[in-house]
Amino acid sequence: MKQAREDRRVKYTKMVLKESFINLLEKKEISQITIKEICEDADINRSTFYTHYTDQYDLLRKIENELLDNVSAHLAELDHKNKRMDDIALAEKIFDYIKENAKLCKLLLSERGDLSFQKKIMTLVYDKIITELTHNSNLTKEDAEYVYSFTITGCVGIVQKWLDEDMKKTSRYMAEMVIKLTMGLIQTFKK
Image (cartoon, rainbow, N blue to C red; front, side, top):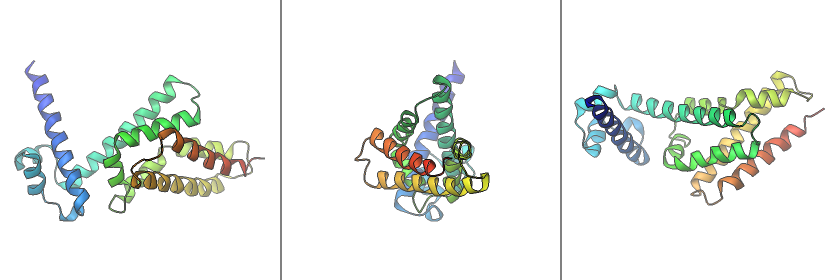
């Protein structure tokens, strides 16, 4: 019983530190954020911070990894539930997840965000798109990778614009747009 209480406290502590860090990251660069500021904002002492993280960069990496893990699990769950899920429905679920985590996604995908994180996000759908591009098309794997890079960079740009405009369009609308653009590009290379 005592173990469960400690787990809740640890979860709460990490959540508060994460929220404080994200709030600070909205205002300034990570290099300008101090552990003292994070702890004061979270009302947590520094030793507690260091129990969980080595520094603000470690905290950012763990936040990024948590988001990547959640997106991967979300995609795997959707794929597992429906062996062949409609592409628009899948994209809509991804936009819903982004919307639920808008503040964090906006920060991580902004110019202040980590480029390696943005590349990791892009690789989540790499295999599916490369397979789609090379199957029944005139593209070699190498050429498919160019089309993939173009497509994914465009998709990230669309997500950034959507977030910057406070997600005025619905998740469904955005999903349909991304799928139409992507499939339209893929169709130009079909045999």
